[in-house]
Length: 191
Image (cartoon, rainbow, N blue to C red; front, side, top):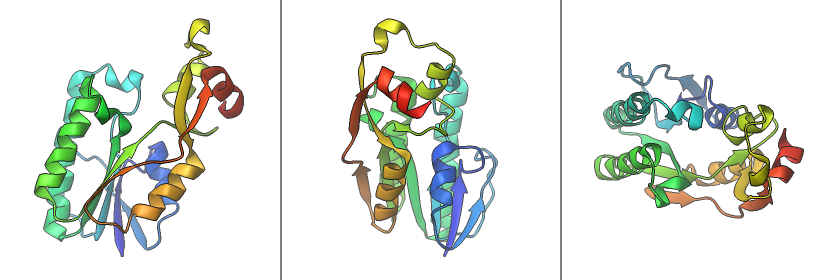
């Protein structure tokens, strides 16, 4: 089986899933450069992933929408399966990132024969460099917010659940058994 990955060269989630996939694994590179590569499964994890990335609306739209359109063309050419890293945030699409992810979910469902959509929650681990972990390391989280509760998965739980569903077909997967903790406790545990 040939597995093609986007977002695994520098991405936290894609790189960790790639380490745990059997078969040949290849990295696509820049998803905005359209090229046909033979593959059976395409793990599409390339995307902006935190508030620092989301500040550039044009880049967010271009990467999520145009990059995903390219990946759909590739997997359809190969008659394979696309595994799309979406976000649990599409359930409340109140920002551009979430709206783009929801749009691409619908596009994949309408244009691919074999797909899995992963509605990924927050994932925390000591090796995480972006998002809340970055804000905590830079002391950018206001003290008044440190007791706020956040739902999340550990990296190991994320990998385990993802591997359990990669052989399914045409499902939207919502991760289960989320943990809940305060930002202060998350800082103690994962930074």
